[in-house]
Image (cartoon, rainbow, N blue to C red):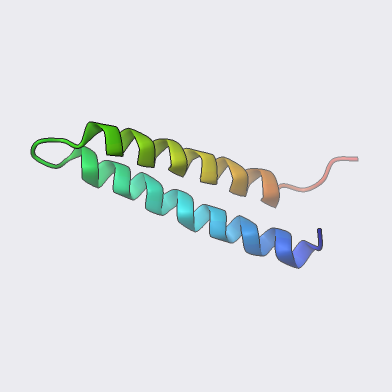
Length: 61
């Protein structure tokens, strides 16, 4: 994969991860809390953040 696409997908993953975690916080702070949606959004956010970290790190030889 070319470096351009790796960085492009990594930036997308970072943004999607932040949005997912933000939605998790918003759903958890509702009255009554939407716990199931908060957990789902939180897990998806963490997965996207992990994907962004994996894609943006330097290769080890």
